[in-house]
Each structure stands twice: as structure tokens, then as C-alpha cells.
Amino acid sequence: MGALTLVAGNAIIRIMIMVLVGIIFTKLGIIDEKITAAASTLLLMVINPINLLSSYLGGYDAEKAKGLFISMGLCVVMMLFAIAESFIAVKKGAPDWEVERACITFGNLGFMGIPIVTAIVGSEAVFYMSTLILIQNVFMWTYGIMLMSGESAGKDTFRKILRTPTIICILIGMVIFFTRIPVPEIVSAPLKSIAGSTTPVAMIISGSIIARSNLKEVFGHARILLISAIRLIISPLLMLLVLKLLPLPQLLSLTVFIAAGTPSATNNNIFAVRYGKNAGYATGIFTMTTFACMFTIPALVILYNLVM
Image (cartoon, rainbow, N blue to C red; front, side, top):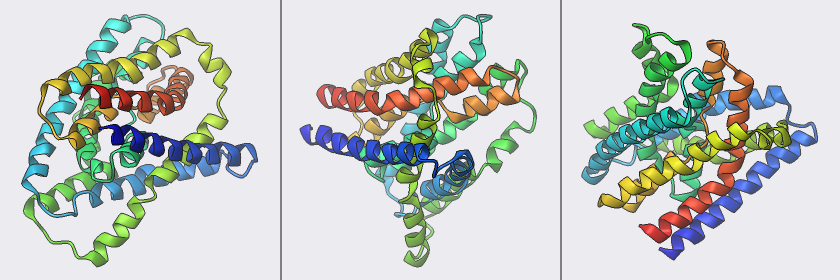
């Protein structure tokens, strides 16, 4: 198990170098906000969905199929834990309570989760991340909308979920996997090549975001530090207690564990803008958790190595 810590350490060093590239090129004025926005769209709408789809192209495997359904159940537990934590930590009616609860509940499974688990656990982990993303999206577009808007989710909620490139690719991948449709290498190879760009693109974007942020102001905000600690430390530790009780393969349990400690989701910022909440505050939490996870996730992997 000591090898896991070494692998994780090397992966985080590589990630930090990629983030540093984003910071340096932003400070030099080469990467501006337009480039960052365009690259973010490319990542979220094209690269990540293709990565998720390609994770299903390795052929049907009974153990992987079993793990897929287990990961769905674990994600439901993870979401319920996060919602409970947000209710305990944030009182309804307090300033920006909706934003704080959302930032505790919803992690950045796509933008940060996929590249981090790929770097630490391997590309096979994306297979299980896909189901975590699927389940979180259901929670986000139902409970998340109710939380931020104060109204029930509309009739077209599930239509909106199904229309996103991420969910479309996950569902196509599941169909291919469970029906055992053979995918020729001439198709799968270029898709996997695109998928391979996930981590560097995501980390360079993260570095660019960090470079334009006022970290001194973010670190000086006590509530942001509290919400970040809950999202990055308390949430994964609670999931570790559950995972410790279950006889799961390391690939599955470590993927779920890391997912539980991912930074605040970018959709929290988007929903805050859409429903007239404090978007600047949501961005502050996003920035803080994105920066801090570079240190908390390696520590969590070391803890996992010791406990599991």
C-alpha cells in the first residue's frame, strides 16, 4: 500500500506543475479570461464527455458492472451525507445560506474530479466517476435548483439533465457496455487520445483561475475557510467511515473517497448567477477549495493508505 502514496505524490506533483503553467502564462498575459472561458467550455462540453464515453469502450466485465451499481449507491450516500452536513453547518436564513449549502453539497466531479482520479488512480477510475457524476447531476438539477431558487424543480428538469453532453455520453457508454457492442480501434483510439488531454487542460485552466483570484482576500474570509474545510475534509472523512465497512476493490473505494473531497462545483457559481444569489461569494469558495484541494487530496490519499 506504500506504493499508493508514492504514486499519489508523483501525480500531485505533476498536477501542481500543470497548475503552475496556467498561473505563469496567465501572469504573463498569454492566457486571458476569454481563453480561459473558451478552454473551460471545451473541457466541459467536449473533452470530459468524450473521456467518460471512452471509459466504457473496454468491453463488458461482470465485476465492473457490479461496481458500477455499487458506485451509484455510494454516491447517493455521499450526497445525503453532504446535504446533512450543510444543514448542520449552515442555518437557514443566515447570510448567503443557499450558496453555502450548495457549495458543501456539490463537488466538482467533472472539472476537477476526473483529472485528479485519473492522475492518482488511473484512467480506469473514470468508469466509476461517470456514475457519480450521473447521480450528482440528478441531485443538482432537483435539490440544487430547489435550494437556490426556492421553488420546486420544473417539469422539464429531467429533459435538461438528459440534454447535457456529459449525461448523453454516459448513457451512450452504458448502452455500449451493457449490450456489449464492439467498438473498433479506429473509433476508440482517437476518443482515448482526446480523453488523455483532460488532466492538463483542466489543471492549466485551474491555474489561470487561481492567478486572477485575490487569494489574500479569500484566505481572510472565515466562513469561506469553514465551508472549504467541510467540503474538503469532513465530507471525505465521513465517506471513509462507510468505505471502511465495505469489502470493495481499491479502485472503486479510492475513486469514491477522492470524489467526496473534490472542490466546490462550478455549477454552484452558475446557479448563483441564474437565481440572483451571491455569485462572488460562490466564486470565492470555488477558488479556495480548488486551490486547497491540491494539498488536502494528497493528505487524504495518505490517510486512505494508512486506514484501508
